Length: 303
Image 1 (cartoon, helix red, strand yellow):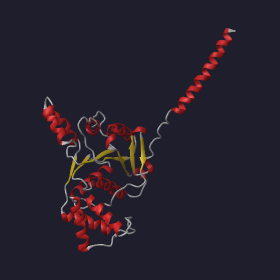
Image 2: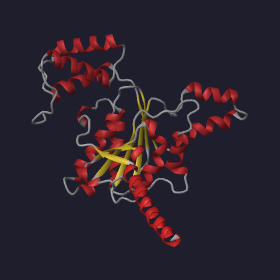
Image 3: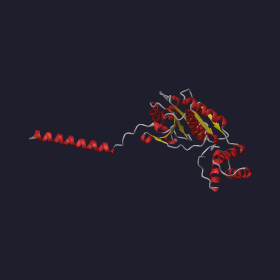
Image 4: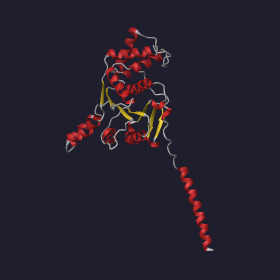
C-alpha cells in the first residue's frame, strides 16, 4: 500500500512540476526576435528588450538645404562613403554651436551615401542606428548584436555629453578603441555634441581642484573625445549664411515670398530670437509657411 501511495505521489508531483513550468513559461517575456535588417535603412535601439525598431521614414532635410558647412559636409560624406565601401574610416564627433545642422548632416550624409549605392538589395545598403544618450551604457550590447550581421552600420548618438558623477562614458571609451574586442569592423560611430570634449567645463575644473593628480584626472576624461578620429567643428553662422538658409528653404518648398520683404522678416525673426542658426532659419520658415498657408511637403520635382 505504501509503495502504491509513493508511486502515486511521484506521478502527482511530476504533474505539478509540469504545471508550474508551463505557468512560468507563460509569465516569462518572449525571447527577442532577431533583427530584420532588410526591413529598413534606419533603426532605433531599445536596450530594455534588445530590440532594433525599424524607422520607416527618417526625419531629415535634403543635403542641399544645409548651408554654411561645406567643408565639414564634404569631409563627413567622404568618410561615410569610405566606410560604406569597407575602406578605412574614422569615428566622427560633430561639435559646436547649437542649431547649425550637426544631427541633420549625419542623417543627410547617410541618405546621400545610400543614394549613391543605388536601389539594389537593402542588404548592401548602409544602416543608420540611433542610440539615445541615456542608453549609452548599453552600447557594448548593441555592438555585440551588430558584430555578427553582414551589413554595415552607422551608429548615431545625438547630443552626447557627460556630467559629474556620470561614468557611462567609460562604456563608450571601451567600445571606440579601448576594449579587448574594440569596435566591430562593420560599425562606425558618429556623435554630436555642443561640447568639444564632451565634458562640462565646471566638471573638468572640479577635477583639477579635487583630484590627487589633477592633470591625470582631467586627461582621463578628455581622452574620450580623442577616440574620435574626426573632429568637425560647427560655428555660428553669419548674417549672409543665415539668409541663404532661409532662401534655400523658401525655394525648396516653393513659398511665395522673396526679395526685401523676405530678408527683413527673416532678420527680424533672428533678432527676436537673439541668434542666427539653421534651426532659427527653419523655425522662421515654419512660421512663414503657416501664415501663408503653404504645407511643408516634399516638392514633386526639385527645383
